[in-house]
Length: 418
Image (cartoon, rainbow, N blue to C red; front, side, top):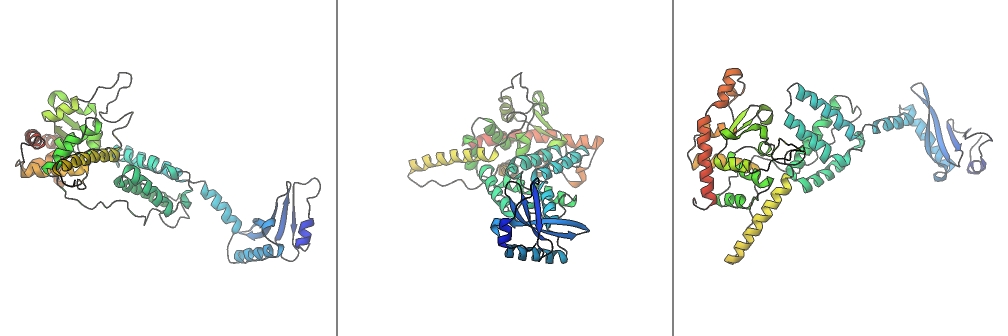
């Protein structure tokens, strides 16, 4: 039957059938499919890979017979050159079943195996899982093959706004790693490139060398507050340890009778056990943390539920707001314009401790390195008796240095040392 607009308008489904296809005698493979309920579409039938395929061109209401015939002719020309329109549509439907969440789940399962065999630290897995499950949750339902750079960039902006640019950097790195792994595993066979590649980093993390002044230390200590974040900030200043280590401090790591905090290998950046002597001021802060309810026991000192402290960016912004308010009050009293606190990070507290302990107290560099848990390559691999010796190495010197530093910091905060 030669299909024309007039012929098509009169076509109907034969009695007793739910579907009827009429092919055009002018263009082989081109036809119209009628379905019960009134749906009418143009179709094109062809063979590819030894199989007969049929692909929908468009709704009859959208294309005239002549235009639909032209499209069918173009489709068949593509098939001659190796295309398979219906096969591509089926493959796309199959690809759409693999979502971003599927990639996240698969990668985290792999990461858990790495933790089990010692190739990855539990803390690294916990951080990666947080970034992938929480920060990228709005994109979890997106087909993994279809995730676009603009979608990633938009979500990075959201993460940077709510959690800070450094957190956005970490989330970006976690997603990039997961996608790279999935591509190498063959989970994203047709993906040509990692979609995270060439997206902009929300923050520039070039090496910094900022050391806080005495006045800035005084402001930070004074305005830190007395909740979890305030305690953490003061412990960072008093111990010189990393924020992740202090934020996840556990009661089981503390030996209060010896004024000692012992971090197991899985909790340190270099994977080595580390003892931190607690000066009286640091010990007092630890002891000020309320005991958990008997009904909901918690080993972690800071944070809520089962997790360690979170919300770093917001807590730091609140601290900076308090410092800014205090500066404004002081400036108004002196009749001058208030100056903002120059940009700083929590890691600057660690660097400031190392610098001032060396320059103002004369603590020997190797003792400062021991406090910071920095070790030489020759020492880092020691096991057994040698490892135990290393852990206790400079124990007395570390305790004396941290006690002297606590006194020095108190003098700075109280204005007795300018």
